[in-house]
Image 1 (tube, chains in turn red, brown):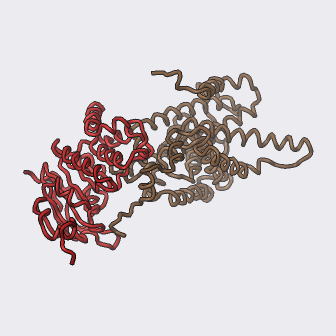
Image 2 (spheres, helix red, strand yellow):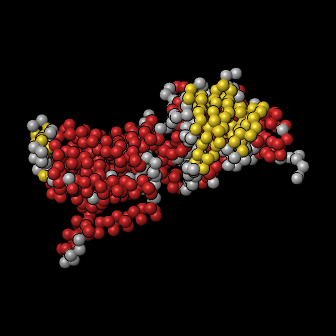
Image 3 (spheres, rainbow over the protein chains, first blue to last red):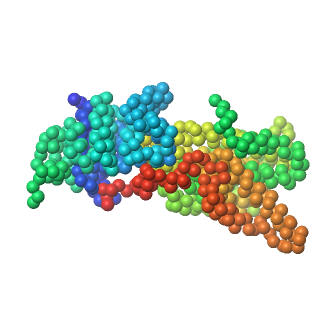
Length: 242
Length: 354
C-alpha cells in the first residue's frame, strides 16, 4: 500500500493555547483510519489542519507525496481531499439538490457531476426523494446523509469525516457506518474521527488514540478494540469499577 | 421552456410597466418629472449594485455612497475645466466603473475577516472617509465647492445639454444592462459561491470555495455599478461636491433593498422605485398641498422618519420585502430551521479551545 496522507510533527495553536503537540500519523491508500479520543483531545483540530482551515505552527502535511501544509482550503479541495465538517453544516435554506451541487463546486464537467449525482442518489435514495426539499427540513439522519453526499459530490480520493454519528439514533448510526464502509469499498480512503469509538473501530482498519493533543496509541483497529486501556477509557462495558 | 402558469399577475404588471416606461416622455412632457425619473434611475442603479454586496453575498455595506462619489469624481476630474481635460463620456462610463471596482477591492481587502456588525462599522467609516478626503484635497477636487461645469455627453454629434430626456433613455439602457449583468452573476458559479458564503461561510470554504476571492469580487463588482451611476450623476448635474455623497445616500439605497427584498432583482426595482416616488414626488407634493391650505410643513425634511416608519412596517408584515426572493422568505420563516438551530450560533471558534 502507498501512503496517501502523512502528518509529521504537527503543532497547532488557537491563539496561545496549544491544541496539538507534535502529532504524527499516516493514512494508507484504501484504508479506513479512525481517530478516537474524548472531547477536547484535538480530533477536529487535526482535521482542520489537514484540510487547510487551520495553519499548523510547526510540522508538515504530506498528501500524495506533496507538501500541502501551506495550501488554502480551496486548493486542497481541488486535490480531492474533502473534509465533511463537524456538526454537518449543511446549507439549511437551500434545497437538497442545491446542497449537492455546491459540493461539486470545484468540478468543471457538468456531465461528470450529473454522473456523480446519480451515484450519490444510488447510495442515499432518501436524498433523491427529498431533492427539492430545503436542507433544514430534513431529519438529523438525513442531514448527515446529505453532508456525506455533498462531500462525495467532489469525488474525493481522501474523505475526512468529523463525527458522522453525532446526534443520531443507534439504528441510524449503524446505517451511516455501513454506508461509510460502502464508500470505502468504492475506492475512497477515509479518515474518520469519532467519539463513538467502538463503532468506528469496528469498521476501521487502523486507529489512533488522541489525548490532550498527543497521540498515545496507534495500532490495528482489532488490537485497539481488544486493548484494556482503550476499553477502559473509550469503550466502556465490561470494565471493573475502580 | 416558457411556462405561462409560472407567472403571476404582478409579473405581467411589471412587464406592462417595463414596456410603458420608454414611452412615458411621449405622454408626460414635463421636464421636471423626467428629471426626477432620471434621479430615480440613478438610485436604482446604485441599488442594483449594492444588492450584489448585501443581497447576494450577505456583506452588510453601510458606506456604499463612497463608491458613488468615486465614480462621480472620476468623471468630473477628467471631463471639466478643473484640469482642462475633456475626455469623452462613453469610455469614461467603463473607466469609472473600473476605478470604483478597484476601490471596492481596496475597501474589501481589510474587511475580509469581519462580518455582521463589525463589517458594517468599517464600511460606515469608509463611507465617511471618502467624501472627507474629497473635501480636503481641495487642490484636486475643488474642496467644498466641488467640481463644476462638467462636460455632458455627446452621441453622434447630438449634445445632451440640459434637456433631461436623453439622460432618461441613457439611464434606462444602463438599468437594463445592469439588471442583465446582475442576473447573470446571480446564476453564475460566482453567484452560487456568494449564496453559499451568505448561508454559511465555513461550510462554503469546506466546499472548496475561495471565500477571499468571492468576497472581493462581490465588493468590486458591486462597486462598479455605482461607477456607472456616478458618471451619469456627474454629467447630469454638471457639478459634484462632497455633500452629495453623505451617509444618507448609503442609507437610502440600503432602505430600497430592505423595502424591495434583499437579493431579489425584481425587489430591487420595486423597492427603489417606491422610495424614489416617495422621495421625489409624494413628499414635495404633500408640502405643496399643505402650503396651499396655509400649512407650512416641509414634508421632505421628514424623509428619514418616514423611511423608518416604512421599514418598521415592512419588517413587521412582510419581512422578506415587497418582492422578496423565495430563499429569503424561507430564511425568515424557518428562523434558521432545524439545521440552522445547530449551525447558526456556531462560530469560528472550535470546541477544542473551550
